[in-house]
Image 1 (cartoon, each protein chain N blue to C red):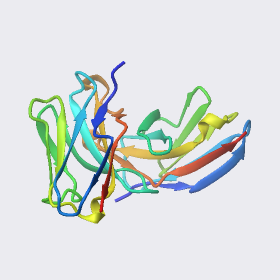
Image 2: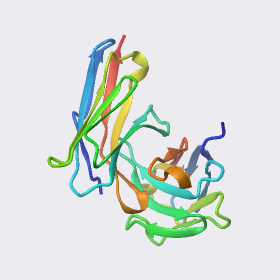
Image 3: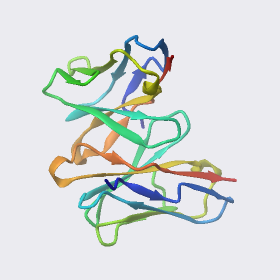
Length: 114
Length: 110
């Protein structure tokens, strides 16, 4: 069983650097979601895709953040000019066409900005 | 912003006891879901209850939903040490994006 995978699992970077995370959803899941979770809090929605179309973006997604899903399969989330406030766990989830209410989460990428 | 608020924020019980946690939310929903998260890991879907349902069971889990009070509860019966985790409620609306609460941290002592 291949679940949602995320790469890297951990990333330490210096303030001002760019970082890119990758998410591979469960095969044939047409929807893909990105969330951010800070310590002690619940995940917060960032954006989601249906196939390759980005359908919604949260106000949390500043212009330093960009997400893509070019072929409707894997997705990347890039953060430019990272700030210490970007330190968080970035979670990816996917859902199938036939049961879109249920989301399957990956293990997350933990980002630390020094 | 967080839609739901879980109560209590933390819960410590002995193995074999029941654990109950509550979730309140603010806006209309299509469904409400509960997820579990072990320390530093991803979330695992536990159960979904639709807005027209009042109660649902899955194994040792029982979920209730009261849309008039905008609240839900999750009961874990006969708890085990492996149930130690954070539990989050999440409301689903249009587009199926989820809005999570702050979570209840449950510690089950052996």
